[in-house]
Length: 353
Image 1 (cartoon, rainbow, N blue to C red):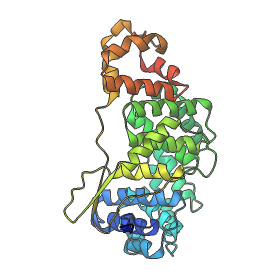
Image 2: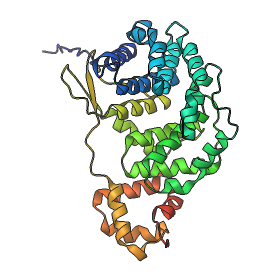
Image 3: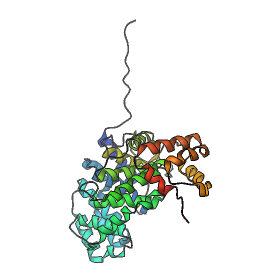
Image 4: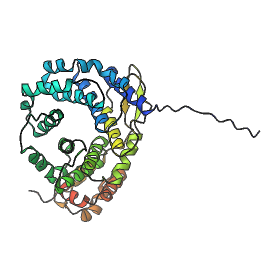
């Protein structure tokens, strides 16, 4: 009667190498076709995360891209409008261990054709410079580019208001200036404040995708993000579900899944620790309560001339107009960052006429 039978239940979590192989195969062959621009986007994002976090990818896993790599130069000559995606893919494949020198040929083609000259924004110029610079080519040759990028990041007022486009641009500027964490980006204090302000908005919006990018950018800038943000992102990452099967729909949260796991890797946590399987997969985040950001904004708007940029003064005035969930989240956000008072001063938009 004292004999206890212990059952060993096999883990559904594959070893890291197998997980990386399954993800590479999924995005390369089972979600979209190679002539779809979204195929380029998804695969470039995954490979970039693997490269910039220093993952060791088995040769047999990389081999899934051998066909693409062999024809990458020809594809670039026919689709030069996608040169940044194509260069990123080839450069990261080689950095991860793909044998060959196609990336240098492709960079030379892009230089000769002046592809970077078609870029209208400084952000895209910075990306082109970063990509082609990995093979020793500067297609921009603009000594004022970094100054303009830092000036954009230093306008803190931009990031005291909800503006996802500007916030994503902010994070990518930090990525390019820091070479994805490999060198100091030399940001002024105002730019660091901008990252905190954008992070507060993302946290209030419960936007894990954007908040993860901001926390990564803060770390690339030598800063430690607020612990509350990091803990919430860890919980959100653990909450993802992965569904596999030949017919699963692709209207999923794959990008947020990738970015949250990138954040995990940057913080030293486990990467893609989910029951991934060979074949087609979709990635879904856990259900969330309604966003507090809209509720807070509407309450502030309704106050009209009664608004104030003084958080301590407005704290008690705005609370009765919020649901319990929004009120609690606002309090957590206020406690998460010492810059919340400065952030709220701009967020309130008081005294403007």
